[in-house]
Length: 75
Figure 1: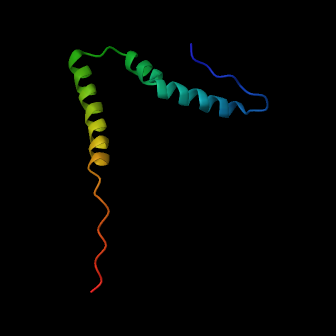
Figure 2: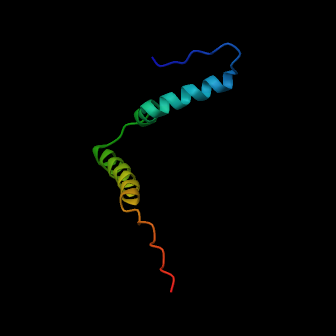
């Protein structure tokens, strides 16, 4: 069970935000949402393809970043 310790003088809102961030980075919230309803094998494959597509877009964007434009020579 995941949790956070509320520090002395810390607002509860801040502790909830830390908990949500922790759960989100570990993928627990996504897993919980996914398990709410039955997912057919076809739906599962489509979901995985969509997430792979998003990952590849970001990967491609940063791997093919254009180099800095060369400075024009003064004539």
